[in-house]
Length: 303
Image 1 (cartoon, rainbow, N blue to C red):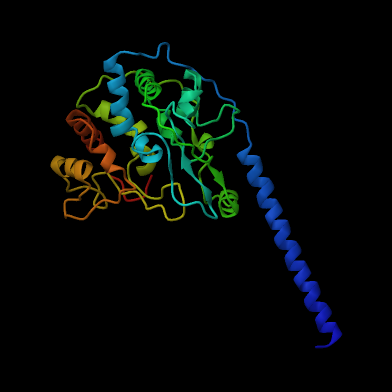
Image 2 (image 1 turned 180 degrees about the vertical axis):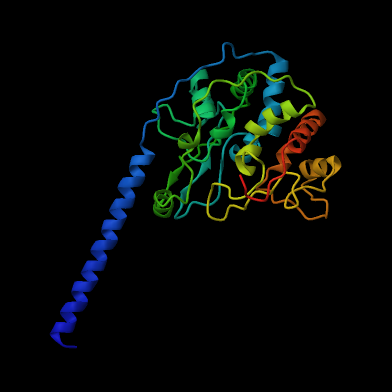
């Protein structure tokens, strides 16, 4: 190999390495700015966090069957890993109890509201994964009941690692392929007006807001892309369109929520948390059905 060719190869290799290092630096700086951005939020704590048994039972029902808290924080709400740590990062649902390593040991009422409604840490930086964009639609009384339940959880001693993005996760974040900073997606809004509970389309709309139906299936419920890791499945069309659930009956809908089975017998992906929704009351299931049936038909993905 002559000297000129060797020199050219070394120069090219050095240039490629320099460009790679520059790209890594750019990704790190851009992701660092977003990860450390302080979000100014106005925390409005419900006037009184109840302590009566009925309110705590209501909070438990919301946590288990509607808000799907156990999906991320584990069956005992003592925290769990959300997949194996890897290049995307480490994602974990924290321990919510008063046990060792739990948030409940130190959280004041304002901290619960800050995390649930605004998706930020005490320092104002964004949480990862937490679906606050949906929980912002939870009414004041229901949020108070949920906090009442969380505050009296049996203590679980379990230290969970802090969620953090790895190199691939940072790159996907900068490229706009990983919508995981929840504070950026959460609207600043007052508590919604109270909606009487019952088997009505109005109450179904309220439930669809903070249970995540509108977040995954879109404001028009026509389904399509869902924010999340690259392998996140698309949401189905729930409208009475030919690409949706046009031919479903109310019994079909109830079977889907209670047992995770479509009318043709095919299972529903558990990414749609039907195992949690199966605990909804009959009135809640009917309310959701009436709301869904009140929506105009839209083609799949036409949000």
